[in-house]
Image 1: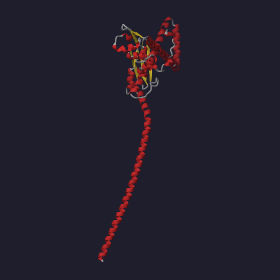
Image 2: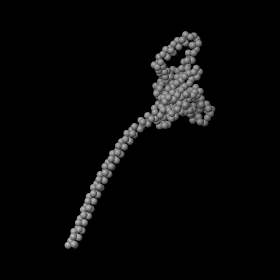
Image 3: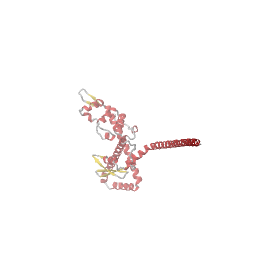
Length: 319
């Protein structure tokens, strides 16, 4: 049965599956294709959607004679009497279905990005849209040379969109993991609020840079056919990135507000206790002072009485 006639329903996929990696990615593969297929990808280090889409043949590794592959071969293949292996048709079909499903999801994502890009461009600069329209008219009238250049322009545009989608996915994936390591619930990076991504095509090559909301512009280095984000990651983790500092501060304030209320209540309780203790001590001091005064008066009366008795005795003796 030809798989070309099958209709792929990408609604069964999580909306953010293109950014899945590691355990999230393997769990999704296990649900869609199967546990054996997920282990086949994991043992090869295929840890994300785009890593899987860029792998030509995930079964080619099974042709190696390696003891580390013995268990996975038993799950994926039939072992013949001559010790040769044949891949199970069901496993191959599951991987093909997974690849087509994820590729379709990627195509839909690219279309959404293209539409957003066109809307933003039209809303921001209508004059530029008119200029592009005029250039396309001139190109159509210029002759056969322009007709050869048109496919190159389309290819460059699609290549730029591929880079854009890949960079955004890698940024969100890394930022989520980084926030987990520092115990900060900072959410996700928002384009045009936390950063801006610029991709410029120079004919046969592309250049990419990220402008952080704190004012620092980071140039991305190109590694083969993709861009490396290590320079941007270093900036976000540095002390000079005010964007990340603000996210940490907002996160800290969100967690400390209830504690501040509790601490204020404790301080009020301590103050009330101090006041009551002070009043008790003052009342005790007053009672002690009164008791001492009474004792002094009584002792004075006794001394006066003794003195008067002595005087009376002396007067009687003289008589």
